[in-house]
Length: 294
Image 1 (cartoon, rainbow, N blue to C red):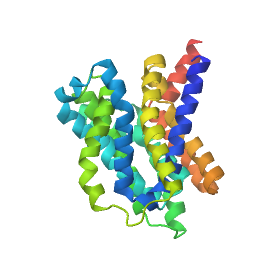
Image 2: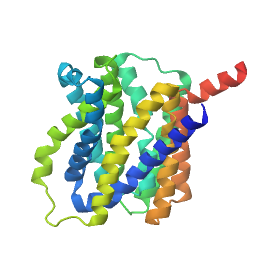
Image 3: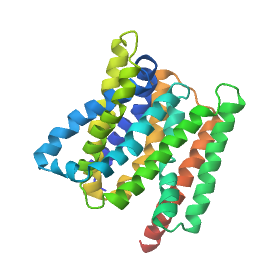
């Protein structure tokens, strides 16, 4: 990768890591449904003009049902679940749990699409979920929270895994910008009744609004654009390595801006999760092969 691609990767990881900060600050004041509705609406407002410039908006009409289902699995449900877990878990912990998405993606693709799971991938799944167990034991064992927020975060990443297989099965060849814009718009429609029914009784503070706008425009709209640009420039296998950087930024931002403190046991669990993801996605195997070739 050239230096500009490395910078783009770091910026994207920083933005996505910051998303967990924005959720943790804004969700208590907006409520979980209203915050997601704001996020999807503003993200659509950022992405839609770009889609119109490419002349691809008709693609949404052509694939509306598949895009709506992806919007449900990849946006509406996971965003709501992560908003809920952000009320109870540190931003750094949520960022670590978010990294399990590729593991769920591999499991769903194996069950649904018949993709193969190598021995190293199976080992990676065991290590990764053991890491989740280490984090869960730390959180639940201290009596700070119940297991439910951790479970909701894992269900959110399961949604990402299901959506990945949906896109591979139903939207192969459709431009990523079409799927991103359409799924955000469809999620806005799906969430509208829930958001209207749970409007906050008190107007959220300016700080909550700023975090909600940053989450919507930066963490969703601009982040998608950066991610798709990276996929085009360096390929999906290298672009997906952002998943390993997001937890690091999530932890750092949480410590700097929210004075969070993660225990050594939580960090250990996070390392195990990332190791598991690296084995499941084949990153470690590819690096060994590249070293042997060199």
